[in-house]
Image (cartoon, rainbow, N blue to C red; front, top):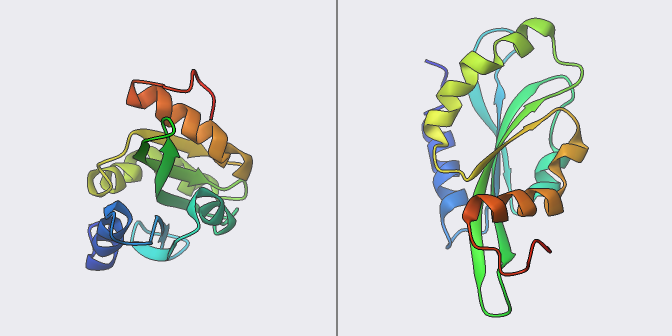
Length: 146
């Protein structure tokens, strides 16, 4: 088993999903340079930008983030994004296994509106992610504006 369903990861996932918790992202990494054992690396309260700061260019990592945005003056929406990070300096064999090994992560972090495949931190631009979440969520009360 990959460890994606470890108590630490499940607890962090529940915290990110909870409206009562300030934690709004988690990051999962491989325990070592080989093998498929996953561990919770970090959690935080600073959203997409803070998650991006913690990504490692030499690793494959999985992030999960709660994104809140306004639909209009009276309402806010909460959506979730799964981030599959493949750092530019990741070893070839690790990159090759992502499509297989990410399945275990997707089963655990199942509730997300979009998946963001990223290999550059610019892929995690909050405005672009919110725009994708709006499209995935149906109604867009701002006419496509953030």
